[in-house]
Figure 1 (cartoon, helix red, strand yellow):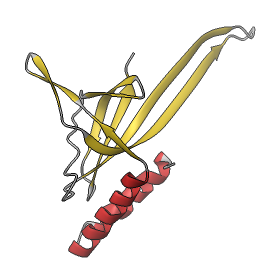
Figure 2 (cartoon, one colour):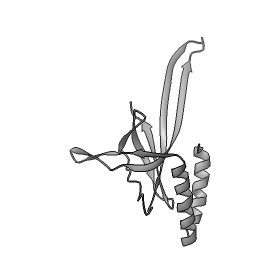
Figure 3 (cartoon, one colour):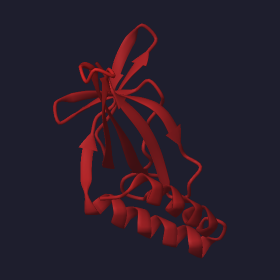
Length: 137
C-alpha cells in the first residue's frame, strides 16, 4: 500500500526526473509499475451544461484514506461519531496505451458501491495525474 506522505516525497523525485528525456521515460516506467501493481478501472461522470456525460473507463491506482472521529463529553458520554473517507487516484499522463487520466474537480465515480466526488486534481507531475476525492453522503 502506498502511504500518502511517502507518495508526496516520491512526487518530488518524479519532478526532478521529468527535466530530461531519459528521466521522463524513467518516471513513466515507475508510474506504470505503481498503477499496474494495484489497478482499478473507474468511469467518471461529469456535468456538462444541463446534462451529464459518462467518460470512458480509465485505469488508475486507488489509495484509501479513512478517518473516524468520536466526540466525547467530560462525563464520558459519546456525543457524536464521524466517519470520513477520501481516496487518491493515481493515473497515467501521456501513456502510449492508457492515455491521460481525464479528471476534473466535481467529477463523480462509484467504487466498491460508494460514491465519490473529485475535489482536487494535480497534473504537474511527469507521467502522472493525481486526483483526490471525498466520499459523498
